[in-house]
Picture 1 (cartoon, rainbow over the protein chains, first blue to last red):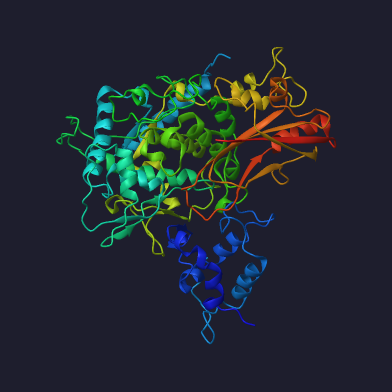
Picture 2: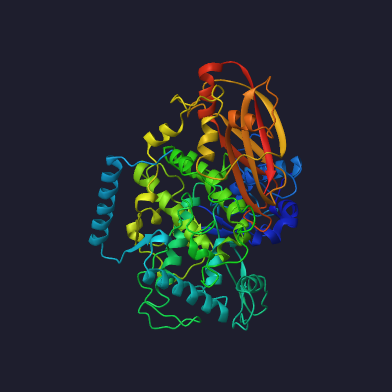
Amino acid sequence: MSVYFDPDIKTIFAPYVQPMLAVSIATDEGTFSLDLSNYESVCQLSQRIKIAIEGYRPETPTAHRMPPGGPLPDESIAMYNEWLEAGMPEKKDALASDDLIV
Amino acid sequence: MTRTKTMNVHVYRLLLVGLLWVLSASLSHAQVIRKNIDSLSTEELAAYQHAIQLLRDRSADNPYLMDGYAWQAWVHNKNRVSVPKENTLSQGDQDPTAFYEMAATQTYADGSYGYPGMCEHGKDIFFVWHRAQFYYFEKVLQNTDPEGTIVDSRGNKCPTAKVGVPFWNFTNEPSGTKFPAIFEDSSSVLYHAGRNLQVNPDYRRFTSPYLLAKLMQESNWSTFGGYPNATHGGYGTFESQMHNPMHTPYIGGDMTYPSRAAYDPIFYSFHAYIDYIFEAWIQKHGSGDITSLDYFLRAEQPKDFNLPGYDPGLGDRPNMGRAELYLDISELGYQYLARGKDDFYTEQELEGLLKDKKGRPLVLGKSKESPYYRLFTSRVSWRPETKGQLTSETITIRAADVANPYSYSYTEKDPSSSYQIDLYMHPVKVKPNVSLEKFRKRYFVGAATAWLDSSHAHHMMGEHKLNVNLTEAMNALNQNHAGEAYQITVNYTKR
C-alpha cells in the first residue's frame, strides 16, 4: 500500500506541529520554518527530519532528536522512509515533489 | 608556579599588535578596539555604559525595537516573538528583565511574528554565530549616540561611535569579588542582580588558564570548536569544558539559562573574551579547517548593519547571512588589544606545570596526581564533584589517535537543565570513590558540562548526548598498561 503525505505522514507529525513552528532551521541554503502540517515545508527539510526522527537509535551521531519524550514507533519511522523513497507523494494521484532543499 | 614570559612571547605579541594596527590603519572602514574591561579609560567605560543605558531606555519605551536591549538579548534565544502593530507597553517601575520576559510572551492579534534569534550551541558554528551576534550588537551600541548629544535616563551623555564591547578575561583573577569590579558596582548599568556573588563565595575564578592554553593547542577544529549539525555530541572541548561551566555554576542568575543569558550585561563581556579566543585560535591554526561556513546564521537583526556581500539565501526566516562572512574581524570593524596578563600560557609553561615536585612529568595512572587534574584545577577553585551518580564500565586500554579516537559518550534522559560529568580511568581493582581526594587526584581524566534549559527549544529534544574526547588519556595509559582491563567511571551531577 502506498504512503502519502496526506493523510499518512501528516497524521504522524500532527502532535508536533505547534512547537516546531517556533523553531528556525539553519541550513546551507538559508533559514527555514518547519511546518510539519505543510507538504512543501516537510519536503524542503525532509532529510533533516529523517536524521532527527532516527536520532534515538544508538548508532546515529546526532545530538538533536525528535520528537520529545521518546522515539516514534518503528513502524512510523519506516513509513516516513518509505514515503521518502517513493519520492514524497503528496496525496493519491499527485505528482512527487521536486522541492527538496536538504 | 610563577608565570614567566619568554622573550619570544613578547616579540610575538608586539609583532601581532603592530600588525593589527597596521591592518586597521590600512582599511577603509572604521575600526574599534575591544579591550579588557579592567583596562578601559574612564571615558571609554563611560561611553560603553552610556550606550548600554540608551539601549535600556529604548526598550523601556518599546521592547520590540530591534536596536533596543530587550530585542538584542532575545537574539540569543527568543526565536519567535509576537510584535504589535503599535506598542502599548512601557517598563515604568518594573524590573527590566521581568518587563522583557513579559513582553516576549505577549500575543497580539493585530501583530506579526518576529524572529529575534536562536543561539547556536553544541555544534561547530557556536563561535561564529556569537561573533555575528556581537557584530550587530556592537554596531547598535556605536550608533546609539555617535556624537554624544543624547542624555540617557541616568543623565549621562558621551560619544559612542568608537565603542567596542570590552572583554572579561575570566581565566584571570577578578578585579572584583568574582567578576570585574564594574559588574559588581550596583550603581552601574552593568550590574545585574542574581549573579552568584553569595553562592559558593569561595570561588574566585573557575576555569583554568592552563586548561585554556592546553585546549588552544588542539589543531583539530572539530575537537576544539564543535561538530557539524551537532553530531558526535556536538560540543567542542572549549564549549563543554570552559564556556558551559562558567555560565553555571560560576556566574549563575540569568546566565544559568540559555534562554535568558543575555539579559545580564556580563554576557557580552564574557563572550567578547570567547571571541578573542576564537580569533587567537584562527591566528594560530588558520581558518581552513573550520566547518559549516556555508551555513546561514539565524537571527533577525537591524538591516542597516548587514555586511557588504550579505545574502539571506532561500527560506522564510531571517538570518545574519552565511558564517563565512564573519571570519575576518577587520572586515567586521574591530580589533583586539590584549596586554600581558591576557596572553595565553606557552607550551613551555604548560610543560613546567605538569611536573611533580621532583621535576618528573606527571604520568596518568602512575603519578599521585593526574596531569588532567592539575590542568583543570590549577589557579582556580573548580574541583571535580565529591558526590553524584556513579556509573562504571570496563574498557581495554589500547592505542588511540585521530583516525582511531577514544571518546566517552554520555546520554542524558532529562535535558531540561544543565549537568556535569567528571570522568576517571582506573584499574578494575580500584573501587571508584569520588569522595576520596586521593582517588579524584590520581584517576581524573576530564570533565564536561552541558548547558541546557527547558525553554531552550532549539529542537524537540528527547535526550542529550555529551561526548568527551579521551584519546590523549587513553594513549597515556597505553604506554604502561596496553591491553589491560580498566574501568571508566563517570560521576554525574545536575546543575
